[in-house]
Image 1 (tube, rainbow, N blue to C red):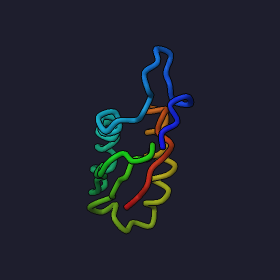
Image 2 (spheres, helix red, strand yellow):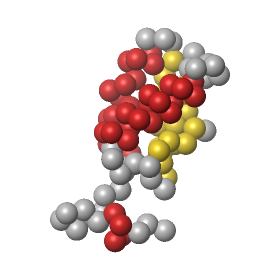
Image 3 (cartoon, rainbow, N blue to C red):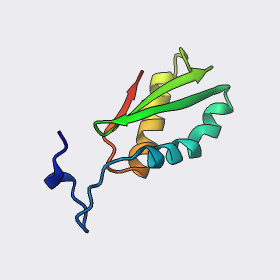
Image 4 (cartoon, rainbow, N blue to C red):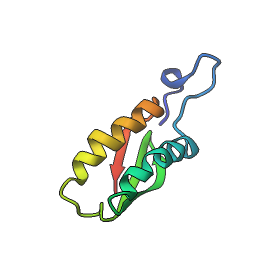
Length: 89
Protein backbone atom coordinates (compact mmCIF):
# COMPACT_ATOMS: atom_id res chain seq x y z
CA UNK A 1 0.00 0.00 0.00
CA UNK A 2 1.25 3.48 -0.85
CA UNK A 3 2.27 5.53 2.20
CA UNK A 4 0.93 8.97 1.29
CA UNK A 5 2.59 10.66 4.26
CA UNK A 6 5.98 9.44 3.10
CA UNK A 7 5.47 10.31 -0.56
CA UNK A 8 3.67 13.63 -0.34
CA UNK A 9 5.49 16.36 -2.23
CA UNK A 10 5.87 20.00 -1.27
CA UNK A 11 2.53 20.94 -2.73
CA UNK A 12 0.71 17.88 -1.37
CA UNK A 13 0.92 15.96 -4.65
CA UNK A 14 1.97 12.36 -4.40
CA UNK A 15 5.43 11.74 -5.86
CA UNK A 16 5.01 8.37 -7.51
CA UNK A 17 7.25 7.34 -10.39
CA UNK A 18 5.11 7.22 -13.48
CA UNK A 19 5.58 5.28 -16.67
CA UNK A 20 6.19 8.39 -18.81
CA UNK A 21 9.04 9.72 -16.65
CA UNK A 22 10.78 6.36 -16.50
CA UNK A 23 10.29 5.81 -20.25
CA UNK A 24 11.74 9.24 -21.03
CA UNK A 25 14.85 8.45 -18.96
CA UNK A 26 15.24 5.05 -20.66
CA UNK A 27 14.90 6.72 -24.06
CA UNK A 28 17.91 8.91 -23.22
CA UNK A 29 20.16 5.92 -22.48
CA UNK A 30 18.72 3.57 -25.11
CA UNK A 31 21.24 4.62 -27.82
CA UNK A 32 24.12 3.31 -25.68
CA UNK A 33 22.51 -0.13 -25.49
CA UNK A 34 21.55 -0.10 -29.17
CA UNK A 35 25.12 0.72 -30.13
CA UNK A 36 26.04 -2.79 -28.92
CA UNK A 37 23.04 -4.42 -30.61
CA UNK A 38 20.79 -4.52 -27.55
CA UNK A 39 17.85 -2.66 -26.13
CA UNK A 40 15.70 -2.36 -23.03
CA UNK A 41 11.92 -2.48 -22.74
CA UNK A 42 9.91 -0.89 -19.95
CA UNK A 43 7.11 -3.26 -19.02
CA UNK A 44 5.66 -1.07 -16.31
CA UNK A 45 6.22 0.62 -12.99
CA UNK A 46 4.99 -1.39 -10.01
CA UNK A 47 5.54 -0.58 -6.33
CA UNK A 48 8.11 2.11 -7.18
CA UNK A 49 10.14 -0.34 -9.28
CA UNK A 50 10.60 -0.21 -13.04
CA UNK A 51 9.98 -3.63 -14.56
CA UNK A 52 12.35 -4.00 -17.52
CA UNK A 53 13.45 -6.62 -20.00
CA UNK A 54 16.70 -6.66 -21.94
CA UNK A 55 16.47 -7.68 -25.59
CA UNK A 56 18.83 -8.25 -28.48
CA UNK A 57 22.50 -8.70 -27.64
CA UNK A 58 21.84 -7.49 -24.08
CA UNK A 59 19.66 -10.51 -23.29
CA UNK A 60 21.93 -13.14 -21.80
CA UNK A 61 25.06 -11.01 -22.03
CA UNK A 62 27.55 -11.76 -19.24
CA UNK A 63 27.85 -8.01 -18.55
CA UNK A 64 24.08 -7.46 -18.39
CA UNK A 65 23.93 -7.37 -14.58
CA UNK A 66 26.61 -4.71 -14.40
CA UNK A 67 24.94 -2.69 -17.15
CA UNK A 68 21.55 -2.94 -15.44
CA UNK A 69 22.45 -2.17 -11.88
CA UNK A 70 25.49 0.10 -12.17
CA UNK A 71 24.35 1.81 -15.35
CA UNK A 72 20.61 1.73 -15.98
CA UNK A 73 19.37 1.63 -12.38
CA UNK A 74 21.78 4.32 -11.20
CA UNK A 75 20.76 6.61 -14.06
CA UNK A 76 17.04 5.98 -13.56
CA UNK A 77 17.26 6.74 -9.85
CA UNK A 78 19.07 10.01 -10.62
CA UNK A 79 16.45 11.02 -13.18
CA UNK A 80 13.39 9.73 -11.29
CA UNK A 81 14.34 10.10 -7.60
CA UNK A 82 11.12 8.53 -6.31
CA UNK A 83 11.95 5.29 -8.12
CA UNK A 84 13.30 2.65 -5.75
CA UNK A 85 14.97 0.48 -8.36
CA UNK A 86 14.47 -1.92 -11.23
CA UNK A 87 13.14 -5.42 -11.54
CA UNK A 88 14.34 -7.52 -14.44
CA UNK A 89 11.76 -9.88 -15.92
